[in-house]
Length: 155
Image 1 (cartoon, rainbow, N blue to C red):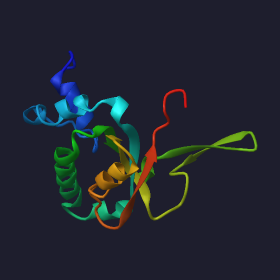
Image 2 (cartoon, one colour):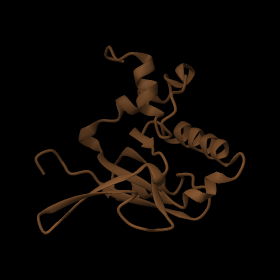
Image 3 (tube, rainbow, N blue to C red):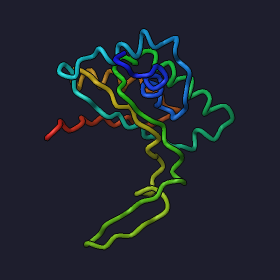
Image 4 (cartoon, rainbow, N blue to C red):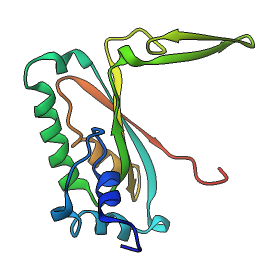
């Protein structure tokens, strides 16, 4: 794997929920696939997971979504470049600039029922391939996966 420690590769591939996981048994099929996907043949996309975080308050809800994200990682590991889950919106701090004046606020940038809960960075041949992967991203209930292409270097 080009000198990259197995534990580092596992953390990069499976960091969608910010939980360090021991996945040495999957490295041969998932991590190798991610490295083998040529950057010249694929574009990178960010898939932002937006949903109501209140769905995770129910007993067992967090554990259930972790299991679903693990299955997603197994299925799409060859395309996943990185990602992370985020702590709840109550931990957010917003730095806002308006008219040249900067202010700091506790909480997310907007009041909304849905919050940014995490993201994946993937490599896909095109937007259609990214959409196909996004359709498999687990949600606790209703929500959205916003897909955006990453700016090309120098772009």
